[in-house]
Amino acid sequence: MQSLEEINKILMINNLEEASNCYKINIGFNNKILSINNKYILKTCYNENRETEFLKEINFYGQNNYEFIPKLIAYDYTKEEFPFCYMIQEQISGKNLYAVWSELSFSARKEALYNLLKVMNTLHNKKVDSVDYIKVIDSEFSRYLKIITEKSILSSFKINYLESLKEALHDNYSTHKLCLIHGDLQFNNVIYMPNREVKIVDFEHYEVAPIEKEFASLYRMSENPKSFMQEGNYCKIDEIGFHYVKTFFEENCKEICSSPNFENNMLIYEILNAIRWIVKYPDYPKYHNILFTKSKKLTKCK
Image (cartoon, rainbow, N blue to C red):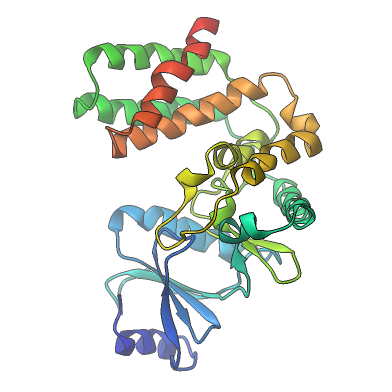
């Protein structure tokens, strides 16, 4: 963490008042986060491998001024003054939705989801350029498969299976309406406001993608909420309450959720997520099950 002197230097450079109240925030962010004077968020990137995503988020805030995202106040990615990239955002006066979800009444949960759906619709209606998303899937899967092969993370038998699975992904994928999506929309990235409105943060993974991909993280969270608990965010988990999230979107987004090949596409996003995490955590059985058991549905279709 930066020293107070370093923090105040950043604030001074950006014509902001000195820090009188400063504390670390662990919930809902991938980078190191400080709350300054309960007014600003200072977000810094110490990991060079994360800089591309960090700059991507700066770019998103710089190009968009939606009411449901934090305002970008200042940033620096030159590393001329400090050996890291940073951004300063407004601090949103709300709570992490994951942390409070299990404490909310059913009517409050439903209202929060309707408000989240309004936010999603606004984001998804932004005009975007066309993308060949089948190529995106092929490229992402191939990149992780290459790492697995080069590092011998899996047996040759399993690598051969993944080679055939790659073809099955391509053959079973069906592109739906393309739109701008958050890319990691789950409750750790949603701020629940005192007026029950919601805002969304952490746009490191935003992209132009088929609309149903926006539901991928929400569905994974709904089915296994405990796996989304982050360090410092230990809270009560009402699993039935989280399961309702999937039901809500199925009932209120029927045009998307009941469209042809929706199930196959959601499985493909799950597979891409699994192979990414196997590269990072090779011994985690949950992702092996997705890759080598659940994925058989696609290889049988091929």
